[in-house]
Length: 123
Image (tube, rainbow, N blue to C red; front, side):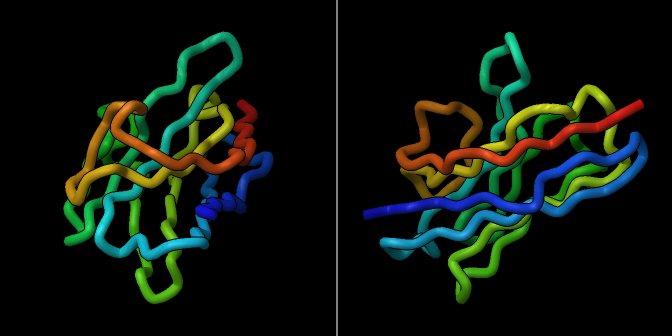
């Protein structure tokens, strides 16, 4: 059974940094793209970042230059380094396993999801 476990969320002041981790188990994920999404209260889930099996990356315009997605296939873990955080980044962050090798931006392109980790940025 595939399981994804996010960690690293918390409360941080604007301008601060957080590093999210997503540990995957129950399968081999090195040949699949992985992604990060977020959902703020009252809003739809939105794409944040994705990394392909060959380390191709894709980012939402709102996080380009501030967030970096990476992966360690030996550990079945994906990371999201978030710098220069803004109050608008406050949301529950989810990691997911993509159905394909290449980065994808639509939630329907992903097959497995974690439970999410809360990120709160104070002004």
